[in-house]
Amino acid sequence: MHAEIIFLGAGGGRWATITQNRGTGGFRIHTEKTNLHIDPGPGALVRMADLKLIPYYTNAIFISHDHPDHYTDAEVMIEAMTYGMTKNIGYIISNISVLNGYEKYENAISKYHQSKSEIHILNPKESANIHDIELIATPTKHGDPKGIGCRVKTNKGDIGYTSDTELIEPLKDCFDGVRVLVANVVRKKNNKLKGHLCSNDLIDLLNSMKNKPELVVINHIGVKMTNPIKECEYIKDNTSVKIIPAKIGLKIELYDKRINISYLGKKTEE
Ligand SMILES: [Zn+2]
Image (cartoon, rainbow, N blue to C red; front, top):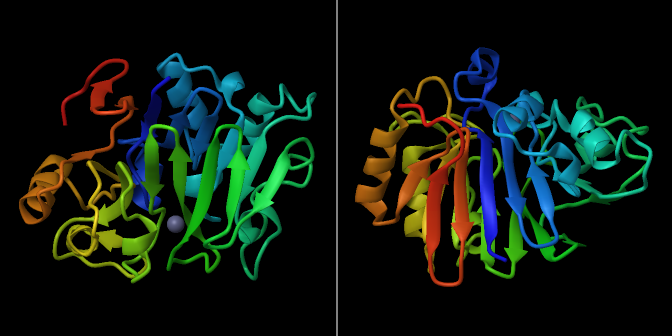
């Protein structure tokens, strides 16, 4: 089977989360044996229902850090994964803040909800084998000091997810050679923000990579980025990498020699 990525949202940051204009449900990676939900933020379940995706099929959940636009639907997703907490099943992969609490960050997932699944608390460079994938944690520099991104190894190639981070030196190696990179770019060009990527940061990251991705998806789009398509054109002009904005229903299929892009549900105009 091919591997696929389906987006349940494209927005990020406080204001995009409150308005829900682009959705904040995270995204899913499906392979033959794995149905992984990454960062099930507010609305993840509602967006899945809209797209007729079945939450019960979820068998792994990754939460990158302890901010609500990344975790608020996670406990409900865990209830779907464990058939209402009746079965010992699935994996929960995250960092110490989300699962145990760290400094001012309380554990976002209750111990009750952690009681039926295999728990992996990862630091950068640590990895977990989950069904037919391997997930390697990548470093971030962001509000949650223990935040992680991930590199997911599938039998159709690797998928990278920066999570929320500013541009830091290790990222170019962590994501070198991924086929698809999901980059959380909250701000447009010349609009730097501490703890986050803007378009220029992504350009610098891509141009510093030895093996650039086949496709980049900008995700976690903030309200100040009013025209993501124009922003993608700017980034493409400066990197020669194919790049598209995330969108609710965006579906990316990875085959051995090609990547397909389509949209589930009703296609809305930008
Ligand atoms: Zn964050």
